[in-house]
Length: 262
Figure 1 (cartoon, rainbow, N blue to C red):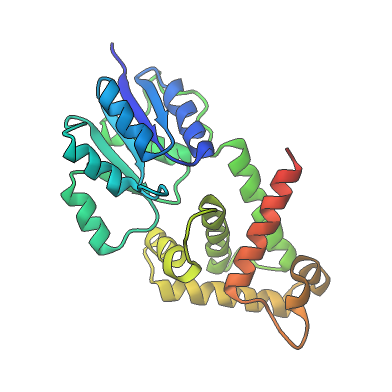
Figure 2 (tube, rainbow, N blue to C red):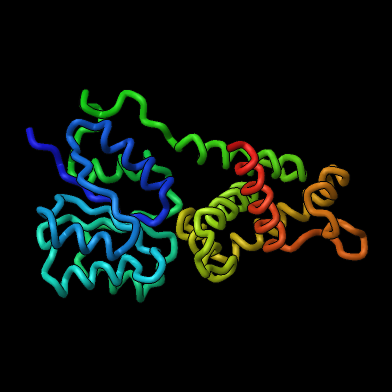
């Protein structure tokens, strides 16, 4: 049986590679190409038989996913291709625009590679118990797992309780910040709304939960660990770090720690 031809369009090489491993390991799919920007994706559609599915990162720099789909429509390319978007930052206006362009589905980010793989299979009505499904579907790539473990260790070191909702919101915020390095995104304008959509809550709850988790850590945590992590931000005349300081500082320390391991 001919495999379902899938094109990956994503400017994040690690995510692209992780998805590529998953789809390549499933005999029902044929990974036809990886495109790291909109220009490469359009060129693929021009020069090759159209894929059955295109998995598109909607937040690519220069020309984002919406711009890519508009270019495909203008050139009458990919008319029979199922277009699936990946994004964590979507306003109602942007969502309506995407829907008007004919995307089959939008997967909310952050989502791990295996969750994306399974969602695509579900959209294609493929049986996940089929023997063709990879026996070992890694929830995260090695680097992604390592990254999350480092973030978790930093949160525990500063005294954030895993029982607080703010713990997972800080963890997700740091991961989003790292995933979108080089892009112009804001903590309050982009990251908070993405987390709110993921958990079905308001932006205000995300912000308040993160602030509460940090405040409780500063009251009950180890001041020496906090000083090692945040330096000047734990001085008595300054108090705890702000939400933004906490997220960005943990992100920077995580990035340095990962780099030192490779």
